[in-house]
Image (tube, rainbow, N blue to C red):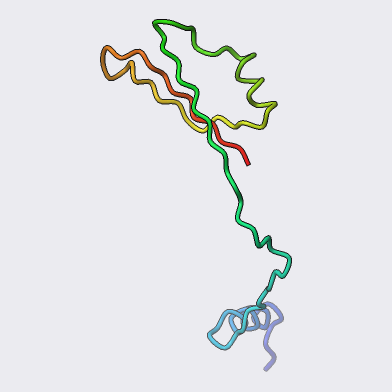
Length: 90
C-alpha cells in the first residue's frame, strides 16, 4: 500500500509545525544604537483673533518636516475659542 503524494505533503507540513520544529532565528546586527529623537510643535489659534491655518500654511509646515499628529478644538467644550494643532518630526 502506498501513500498518495498529497497525504505525504500534509504529513510533512504537520511535522514542520509540530513542537519539534525549530524556527529559523534572525539576528539583525545593524540596528541603530542611538534612540530616535522626536521634536514637537504646537500651533495654537484663537479663532476670535485669527483664521484657522489654510492648506498653504499646513503645506509649509510639511515642507519643514512637520507631520500633523492631532487637532484639539477647545471651542467644542464651551466659550473658549482655541484650536491646538500638534505636530511631530524626527
